[in-house]
Length: 298
Image (cartoon, rainbow, N blue to C red; front, side, top):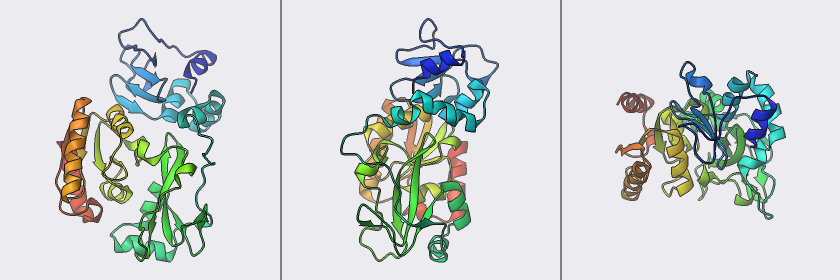
């Protein structure tokens, strides 16, 4: 996003140099989230398109601009389209890329989809409301791939749905999870984190997949498997000061958890791993709540 032009057009007080909090590649302004503290603490990273305050950490784009400009979220969504926010964040789209789409014929959760979630001790209405999941019925496809009888799991990044994953509810398919075709992804799922950015605070809980996030709540985020990418490590370090890594308890996952902890510590994140029995997504909700409480109070 061309934040410099936006700030100039709307008369926002900002600096790019000449202040202790200004660094190359950043545009700084007083932070509306920690008002009362002098200084240009809130920075916009012109290369990777995100807000981060020197005092209070990462903040979502729309909420930040709404406070800076004293406008509603709806007004901000309209304004930023004129400053290249959508395509600049998504970055350059290769010629072989296609328009991002969800599979066809999606509906609200059906009785079958709701029962699948209930059998796994999830509350369907809560999952649908918080995480925006959709139901694919007997006929659903995208680019000749069959998504029938799946729960479609949208990935939202900086206020946009940019990709998705899906879970078979029959447990009869070999590929239980089937992601968005790579050429359809507006942003590759392995370059971002799955979760609710709006709810993130200084402490985060890193897990493998969406169902783990659903179980551990909105302070959790997923890296889509144990083979995380450098881009994801960078995003984690940009947002969180402290991270508990909670992967499955099988040996390869535990090794990757320890490796991720070291990579995060190298970026000055207070990271550590927690060993749990089995799959975090299959924990009882009461046990998961207790685990989260211990992490956040540590």
